[in-house]
Image 1 (tube, rainbow, N blue to C red):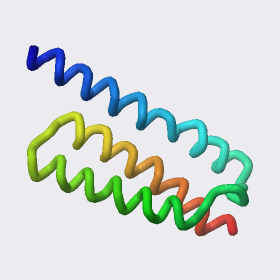
Image 2 (image 1 turned 180 degrees about the horizontal axis):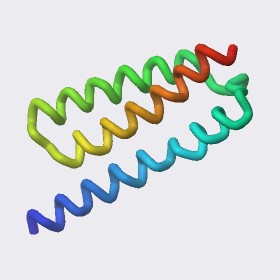
Image 3 (image 1 turned 60 degrees about the vertical axis):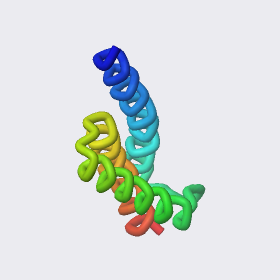
Length: 85
């Protein structure tokens, strides 16, 4: 049952993380972030960073993996937003 729980956590984290990839690609290709909220991404990146820290402190692999990649993707969108004003 423990492996099943881990698999569910990794799948959930993977799917919610991959959801950011199309937006990163679109921002990169179009160099446009006009319709993206700066405040929302500041709050999101801060929250994801805190989840990553929590995952590291609790040694929770699904939290660490998902939030490390999400931080990179959401952070990229945030950087695009700051750069392509």
